[in-house]
Length: 72
Image (cartoon, rainbow, N blue to C red; front, side, top):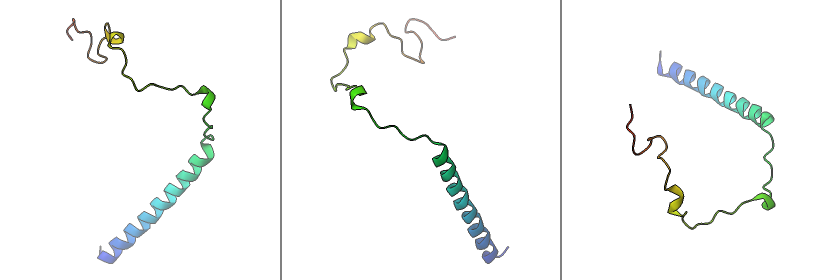
């Protein structure tokens, strides 16, 4: 293939990609429900203060297993 043929093929593929993305965006916009407005009455504030470390006293490290047991 010549350089001109390669550039034409790239341009054609790029145009097809743009059309596909535009079609996908339209489909998603039709199917996606409207985003509800935030209701300030239902919002919960989370303090910036650290949690009490005693909350984690008897917890295991998730994914690592219990501290006193060995993996098989």
